[in-house]
Length: 236
Image (cartoon, rainbow, N blue to C red; front, side):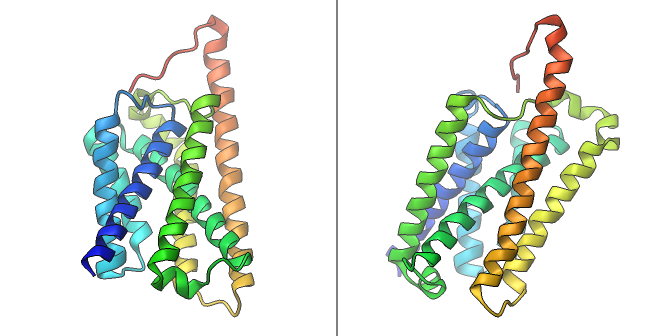
């Protein structure tokens, strides 16, 4: 039993470290300047996730993780709260989508079942390894292509940011993430295919929202700095 819990604990740490890395890379925050805080955040979230999933067996684990993720960024990095919320929500969406695709693909290919996902240590390890590999490839892709959001953190201290559509957009994404978790854990579907369809639609909607936000942010940066031919480097 101790060995099982040890393996699950390590898998949880690796998973959340990957999510934190992707979240920071997605926002073009220099990893080499923040590797210690990223490691600390990943270990704390991984430990919390392990405790909630395996000890308490809480259905609200994703929501609790999202809250703690936001607070940890806020406390450790001292970024504006709204900026921290964007990082945690967008990172959570990417994590959810990867987990959804890996799980559904495994189910449809008859590589595992819902029961084996919950009870089999071997299946759990293999799924986590597949998820980690996917996270790693996404991180490499983002790092090589430099695709990501570019925000000046200090701008989020201004109150007009909270009065603009940006706040509403982030709030809608947050509601979407929470709603998705509620649907996954509390709504009963007659068949797995119906669940796949519903979660698939939600995943596509959230990814489209991310893409829209990325395009809008890219347009803003181009209009803001291209006139002076002075594209700033991210300073966080």
